[in-house]
Length: 249
Ligand SMILES: [Zn+2]
Image (cartoon, rainbow, N blue to C red; front, top):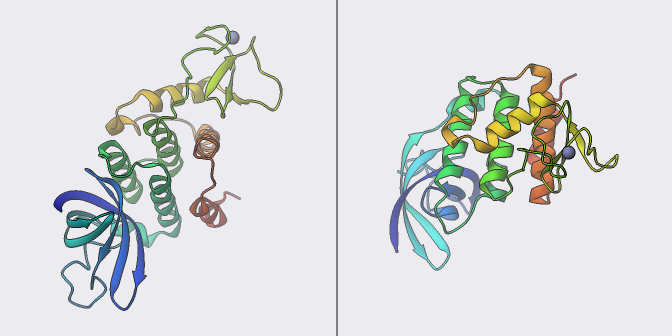
């Protein structure tokens, strides 16, 4: 079967002499693995459009669950990400999140739009890196069906509290009076709860449109990263690499 769809290359591996095996996050088929035969050859027409972070119009042949890229017309490459090792490592982390969380064999427009916007804002330094990171982590979890319920206290239903407590396993929040047992929830200051509500509720195109102080962003980023790991039930090797080079002193 032949189909044409837009996709972002989220992983590339060399196979054989000149072939590439890529993982692409596509608009119409979600995550796919596809061969780009000859893509590493000097004059191959598909070389430019099948590298990591390339956003391309892909013409694919499928046979069973094997895809082959017949044509890759490059639309955007986010090449400037490669000039900054911290941005590069964060971009690779965003791609790993997509590989773990995005669906297969079904449309994935929102996942793709989120990742494209994140890479654009990161490469152009349009928003703070930790803000982009936190929004990608939490919104991806939401898109995958793990939306936290931060609207009201899970126990008494109040929407007003001086302090909040968040249980990452259940995604529920508790007010100051219903404070859960020590060790089962982390404190969620009001500004962070507002950010969680914003990211959860916003359209993908607006999800990066909030502001927080640097300290609050750091706390939010810790919380969203933990939440994603708990919900995904796995760690992310690219996140460890990011911290190995970017951990603030
Ligand atoms: Zn309560």
